[in-house]
Structure formats: C-alpha cells, structure tokens
Length: 454
Ligand code: GAP
Image (cartoon, rainbow, N blue to C red):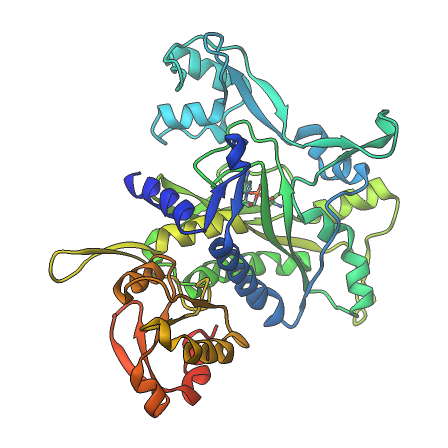
C-alpha cells in the first residue's frame, strides 16, 4: 500500500495522471492523463491492437458509437439487471456494495458471488459487519442499483428519448456482427475488436484508476461454431496471458481466477488477476457467452443473426468467446509493475520505471551536456522525432536529468557533448543497466528502432 501511494504521487508529479478538475478540488473518481500518461496509455492500446487486430488475420477492428438504440440494452439485459447490491449505512449515510463488505470482512474466505441478496443481508447482520467509514453496524436492506448512466436525446425529456452511455463496448461488436462479416467477406470463425470509452455509475469506485466511472475498454469477440468454442475459450485464456507477458509482466504477479458463479447463459468465465499493491484484483476477463448475445439481438431487433456457412450451407447463430480488458486498469497495473526503487552504490536511491521499451512513454531523451550544444542536440532530436516520441531536456545537471528520465521510464538517453561536434558520435545510456556506449548519429534511428520493437 505504501508503494501504491508513492505511485499515485509520482503519477501526479511526473505528468502521468492528474486528479480530474484539479483546480476545483476535483470530482471524485475522475482522472486526467497528462503528457506522459497519455503516451503510455496510447502505447498500451497500440500494443493490444497490434496483437489482436494487426497480427490476427481473421480479426477486424471497429469503432462503434457510444450511444446506441436503447433496445440494445434491453436485449443485452443491462436495463433489467446490470446492477450492484448496495447498502446504506443508516448512521453515516455512506453507500457500499454488500458483496465488497462481505469479501473484506471475511478476508476473501467467503465468496459473495455465490450468495443471494437475502443470504448477503443475513451474513452482514449475523457477523455485525461494520461500516468501513464510521464503524457502526446499522444497515438498510440491499437494493439493486443500476449502473448505467442515462441522459436524454432531443429537446423533450420523455421516456422515448432516454438513452444510455454504454456500460461496455461489447454490444457495438455484437450488433455489427453481420455488417463486418458481409463487408469483410469474413468466415466463421472470426473476431471483432474495439477500443473505446465505457461508463458505469459504480457504487464503490476508487483505488486511483482501478475502478472509475468513465474508463476505456479493449474488447474482442470471437465468433465460432459451438463445437469448437471450448477450444477457443482455452486459446483466449492463453492469448490474454501471453499478451501481458509480451508487454513486460512477471508471470508470478498474474494468476487465473475461474468464476464459481456463471451468468445463466455462460458456459465458462475466468479473470486474470494481477497482484496490485492493494492485493490480487481482476485485470481482465475471458467469457464463453454461448449464442446468447446474438440470439437476444435477433429476438429484440427482429433481424436474423443467422450465419450461412458457405462450405456446408448450414445456417446457425455462432457462439462467442469474449476477451475484455480495461485500458486504464491495465495502465495502472503497468505502472505498478514498472515501479522500482533501486539502491545505488554510495547509498543513493533512484526511482525507475522499468517499462517495456515498446510501451514506454518516451523512447529516448536527447540531452545536451551544456546549453551551447543545444543546436547540435536539436538536430539529433529532429532526426529521432520523425520516428519516435523524444524528450528534449537541456535544464539542470546531467545527473538530475537522467533521474527524471528514469522516473518516467525513458529507456535510452542520448547525450550530446563536445566530442559530438568533432566526430558525430553521441553517448547512449541504458535506463536499466545505466551502462553507456558511444554511437555514430547516423546509426541512432536503427539502434533505437531495434530496442523498442514490439
Ligand atoms: N463485456 C464484458 C465486460 O464488460 P467486465 O468484467 O464488466 O466485462 C471488463 O469488464 C473489464 O473492464 C474488466 O476486467 C476491467 O479491466 C474493466 N473495467 C470494468 N469496470 C471498470 C471500472 N469501473 N473502472 C475501470 N475498469 C473497469
């Protein structure tokens, strides 16, 4: 937890993530990505897209609208049952999720996912579970609280115009199943992926960007035949895991968590959890959704969702394997994974973010040793900045500038000195080993490109 606070502070002081509406004392659970954070998050999204769209010949990307016809949410079940079991403390009026109260009280030994609302109420009463805020145990009953944000479209406020901010990106993929299949001449099995904003009026947001009310999801739906679906479910569990390793996660900080309680339509579901400084928590989900989503959209829209197999002439509604991960929750995990306080010879400590070079916000920093070398340094910057995000820093001692780059995880620092003017060479310092080598400026772009390849 101590590290978590340090990471939150570093995020603010070094331009990763600021509290939302900061000068107005903030708006609870909203966060703004700063100049360094936006690069990190974009690089993570790019790495995901590269893995699940660019390098996946049968997967197609889309970008669906945030607003959808309200019938979509009736079909998906969100209008009726996308809710959390909330309880209010009668004493201090704070609101909590009953399942979270039970999990915290039992230190994870009791699984509230397997309990009905009545069973949760009984557990909380019998164990006199205390309010985390005021310590009393005086609760209202459980009420289900719908998590969708709604607004109205047009000039009148009647129910006809009620629309929702999407609580997941997945429905944009389901409703476009046939559009993508036909326009791309895709054959089952194939995938649809998208990255986009989602909104949830969470009862208990918190822990920095771990659970927020506005967040980005990266979701991928794989449409396949029912008989092949369990094999693909296993494949996506592995692909999701391998993606995390490919961007630098230590496998010892990850674990699978199979769900005990499944949605009535689901055949299997599992999370990958990450060992955040706050404990093991969900990072992403892999869900076997059967043919539920497409069947429901067929029923509610009145449009056929049948796929015609061109080889067998068989008509059927495909099964779906969903892989879903929050871009912000993953960015937070990447920040936690990268954070390191390293003891140096001589007793000093340096804070260093060991990001995988491909997702590091800046790939390289250009540092003139002295101000009067700035023109030459600017030439080097221009050469590199055509290809990479490059930081240019000419203020302060070189040691302090190295430390600052370590703190934002820049994998390489290029120093321009007086020899550069003589022989066109520069020094490159490696973030992790702090070793330095000398290289000709003409070789720099290729050298950096190789180091940051993904
Ligand atoms: N379409 C399936 C779906 O949305 P989910 O488990 O509700 O499944 C998927 O969400 C992922 O989205 C989670 O594993 C998490 O990474 C991210 N996520 C969900 N709610 C979030 C929130 N309130 N804040 C940040 N990330 C969230």
